[in-house]
Image 1 (cartoon, rainbow, N blue to C red):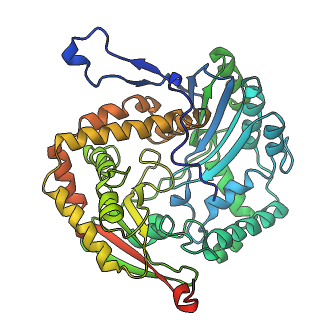
Image 2: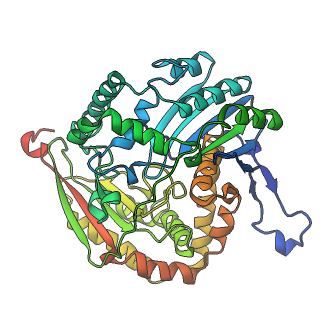
Image 3: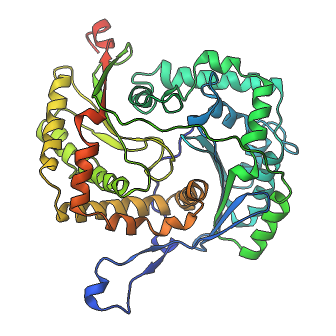
Length: 465
């Protein structure tokens, strides 16, 4: 599965307009400086959501198309189908033959990729600005009609099955914990099935499946298009209307129920791994509902507990106990805390020596959780906001504007409001110590967590490893 890096390199602070509150009194200007992303949002008559965000820092443009279909709601008995279809989108369209889309981008000095996530499938190109029209034409061409042939399907079924074998089945810690944990922590099939795909399900996909999936979900009224970078606004609007405006909308099916019940008991699982030679543990807590006050509180708790060298779990497990050299964690391992639209876990994981037991790790974790249960202070929140802002600006400014395009499309698809990109900081600043402490009590309780431990069988078969 192609995955866009969660944290992207920072291109330039000049990508954004900074509002410094110069006309306010001194006591009102403290901590008011923040980025302001230019956002122009409108919809075509066929339902396509369009977001333009201009920036003339460099002569490049990002074109991103996000379809509101991820592997969370792919068809039953077709696990991995959303990801398989991502591959199909590079196999040709009405006017571009097999692999010609990729060649078109690369020969024009650009880069491209695509990925399948929980709640969307996305495609993007970064090209020199004067090639914007070419890329809009190409994206519209494959939205208008895909080359659905048995040869292409059979070929990509083989590609995806090999990808599963290479990345999951034949790798130590393959799928741990990003693929494994949702299957253990969740109870609703839509959230808990094998997103990468069972090999039998991948083989079972047929041409009718592909045609129906494309007709239903790869339609303009189920998509968002963002253009970020150096472009002429009026000309870009005209091009978007020219190439996308007459693509017909589809009749979208009713969204399935993807809700999860409140977890009332701690869950513990062990996964045998014949290729691993050290144990590993992942601990996941169900998140509050997206966009609630508690959701933003958990975002700051993530900063307090696992992000950065001063994070409490890093200090405890790495520095004090020496159990591991790296604690990884966050909200949404396949993106960030903003680009998903359903149940999610806050999770962290670590690999440790065979001399350390799972019980040792859990005891240390519980010590940290008990410490913050005693109360989070305003100073801790202020420090968390500093780290959050740094991470957010890295994401927004990264990779020629792709991080910005990602959030704009996500907020358009999920909230019909891409301007939310400019209110993220405000929501975090509303979080109080009282709210955080309430969130800890409800969401960091042991009965809300799932613990998954890798049992390393390779050490038994090869003691010298």
